Image (tube, rainbow, N blue to C red):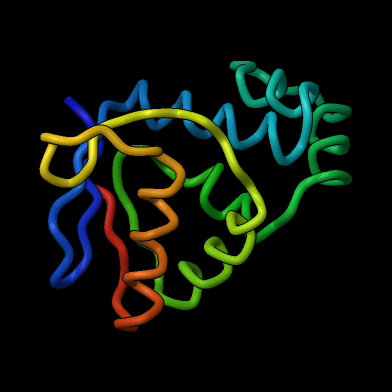
Length: 127
Protein backbone atom coordinates (compact mmCIF):
# COMPACT_ATOMS: atom_id res chain seq x y z
CA UNK A 1 0.00 0.00 0.00
CA UNK A 2 1.08 3.51 -0.64
CA UNK A 3 0.22 6.94 -1.89
CA UNK A 4 -0.48 7.51 -5.57
CA UNK A 5 -0.09 11.09 -6.81
CA UNK A 6 -1.58 11.97 -10.18
CA UNK A 7 -2.24 15.01 -12.33
CA UNK A 8 -3.58 15.22 -15.89
CA UNK A 9 -0.76 14.30 -18.28
CA UNK A 10 1.77 13.58 -15.52
CA UNK A 11 3.03 10.04 -14.96
CA UNK A 12 1.54 8.40 -11.88
CA UNK A 13 3.89 8.85 -8.91
CA UNK A 14 3.72 6.15 -6.24
CA UNK A 15 5.46 6.08 -2.90
CA UNK A 16 5.12 4.26 0.39
CA UNK A 17 3.20 5.98 3.16
CA UNK A 18 6.29 5.62 5.36
CA UNK A 19 8.44 7.44 2.77
CA UNK A 20 5.92 10.28 2.55
CA UNK A 21 5.79 10.53 6.36
CA UNK A 22 9.60 10.57 6.71
CA UNK A 23 9.97 13.20 3.99
CA UNK A 24 7.46 15.47 5.71
CA UNK A 25 9.28 15.02 9.03
CA UNK A 26 12.56 16.07 7.41
CA UNK A 27 10.91 19.10 5.79
CA UNK A 28 9.39 20.14 9.11
CA UNK A 29 12.71 19.77 10.90
CA UNK A 30 14.48 21.84 8.23
CA UNK A 31 11.80 24.52 7.92
CA UNK A 32 10.45 24.77 11.47
CA UNK A 33 12.95 23.08 13.79
CA UNK A 34 13.12 20.16 16.19
CA UNK A 35 10.18 21.11 18.39
CA UNK A 36 7.72 21.15 15.48
CA UNK A 37 9.09 17.84 14.22
CA UNK A 38 8.40 16.40 17.69
CA UNK A 39 4.88 17.86 17.64
CA UNK A 40 4.26 16.33 14.20
CA UNK A 41 5.20 12.87 15.53
CA UNK A 42 2.81 13.06 18.49
CA UNK A 43 -0.46 11.20 18.41
CA UNK A 44 -2.09 13.80 20.66
CA UNK A 45 -1.04 17.44 20.82
CA UNK A 46 -1.65 19.96 23.56
CA UNK A 47 -3.02 23.45 23.11
CA UNK A 48 0.52 24.70 23.85
CA UNK A 49 1.83 22.53 21.00
CA UNK A 50 -0.77 23.95 18.62
CA UNK A 51 -0.03 27.52 19.71
CA UNK A 52 3.71 26.99 19.22
CA UNK A 53 3.21 25.38 15.79
CA UNK A 54 0.97 28.24 14.66
CA UNK A 55 3.47 30.84 15.87
CA UNK A 56 6.38 29.52 13.79
CA UNK A 57 4.85 27.77 10.81
CA UNK A 58 3.96 28.83 7.27
CA UNK A 59 0.31 28.31 6.30
CA UNK A 60 1.23 27.65 2.65
CA UNK A 61 3.71 24.94 3.57
CA UNK A 62 1.23 23.49 6.06
CA UNK A 63 -1.17 22.86 3.15
CA UNK A 64 1.28 20.15 2.10
CA UNK A 65 2.60 19.01 5.47
CA UNK A 66 -0.78 18.53 7.12
CA UNK A 67 -2.65 17.18 4.07
CA UNK A 68 -4.21 13.73 4.26
CA UNK A 69 -1.76 11.05 3.21
CA UNK A 70 -4.36 8.88 1.52
CA UNK A 71 -6.72 11.03 -0.56
CA UNK A 72 -7.63 14.53 -1.59
CA UNK A 73 -6.38 17.13 -4.02
CA UNK A 74 -4.43 20.33 -4.42
CA UNK A 75 -5.67 22.96 -6.85
CA UNK A 76 -3.18 24.61 -9.20
CA UNK A 77 -3.35 27.70 -6.94
CA UNK A 78 -2.51 25.60 -3.86
CA UNK A 79 0.32 23.92 -5.79
CA UNK A 80 1.77 27.38 -6.43
CA UNK A 81 1.53 28.31 -2.74
CA UNK A 82 3.20 25.06 -1.72
CA UNK A 83 5.87 25.28 -4.40
CA UNK A 84 6.87 28.78 -3.28
CA UNK A 85 7.02 27.61 0.35
CA UNK A 86 9.16 24.59 -0.60
CA UNK A 87 11.58 26.50 -2.86
CA UNK A 88 14.06 27.56 -0.15
CA UNK A 89 14.00 24.17 1.59
CA UNK A 90 16.61 21.53 0.84
CA UNK A 91 16.70 18.06 2.36
CA UNK A 92 18.79 15.07 1.44
CA UNK A 93 16.36 12.15 1.08
CA UNK A 94 16.67 9.69 -1.73
CA UNK A 95 13.70 7.82 -3.17
CA UNK A 96 12.33 6.38 -6.39
CA UNK A 97 11.38 8.57 -9.34
CA UNK A 98 8.44 8.17 -11.70
CA UNK A 99 9.75 5.15 -13.58
CA UNK A 100 10.99 3.45 -10.37
CA UNK A 101 14.22 2.64 -12.22
CA UNK A 102 16.24 5.60 -10.97
CA UNK A 103 16.69 7.03 -7.51
CA UNK A 104 16.15 10.76 -7.01
CA UNK A 105 15.95 13.43 -4.33
CA UNK A 106 12.42 13.13 -2.99
CA UNK A 107 11.89 16.81 -2.29
CA UNK A 108 13.16 17.76 -5.76
CA UNK A 109 10.70 15.25 -7.24
CA UNK A 110 7.83 16.88 -5.33
CA UNK A 111 8.91 20.36 -6.36
CA UNK A 112 8.88 19.21 -10.00
CA UNK A 113 5.37 17.76 -9.60
CA UNK A 114 4.03 20.96 -8.04
CA UNK A 115 5.69 22.99 -10.81
CA UNK A 116 4.12 20.71 -13.42
CA UNK A 117 0.65 21.42 -12.00
CA UNK A 118 1.31 25.16 -11.83
CA UNK A 119 2.55 25.36 -15.42
CA UNK A 120 -0.38 23.37 -16.80
CA UNK A 121 -3.00 24.72 -14.37
CA UNK A 122 -4.10 21.25 -13.35
CA UNK A 123 -5.04 19.76 -9.99
CA UNK A 124 -2.90 17.23 -8.16
CA UNK A 125 -4.77 14.27 -6.70
CA UNK A 126 -3.89 11.81 -3.94
CA UNK A 127 -5.25 8.25 -4.09
